[in-house]
Length: 138
Image 1 (cartoon, rainbow, N blue to C red):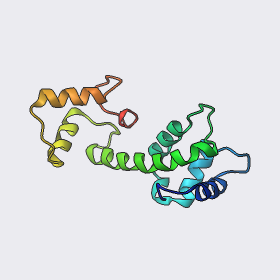
Image 2 (image 1 turned 90 degrees about the horizontal axis):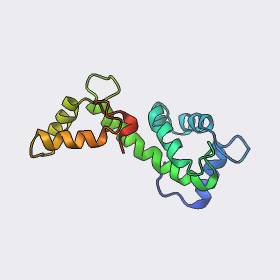
Image 3 (image 1 turned 120 degrees about the vertical axis):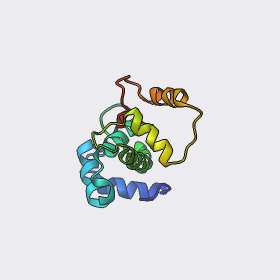
Image 4 (image 1 turned 180 degrees about the horizontal axis):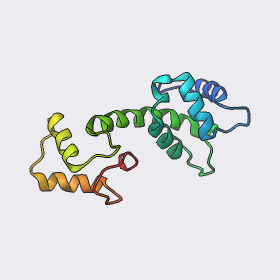
């Protein structure tokens, strides 16, 4: 999947995803991604995030004019999901502060102190649940 498809390529791919009604539901997108791009097909969180963000009209469907965005977003959220899964050491689908801190150490990202790191963690933890969920990561 290329992030830089021309309009003709996007239209052709859109038609391959579409059931013929001119717009894509989440089910159509999920089915097509699983079929055409199996490397993304198992990453349901990335598909859902891309679908929600690409639906800029808010009508519950991805239209042809929104389709290029979903292609880019699938790649983006798949990458984020991979990092998220690496940080989620205990596989509970959320990142604790300790996992977040360990991730910084593994990636060799320097931080001044735990206070600064905790502030960064809290800025990502938008629901203030004490964990970072995939839906909170951008």
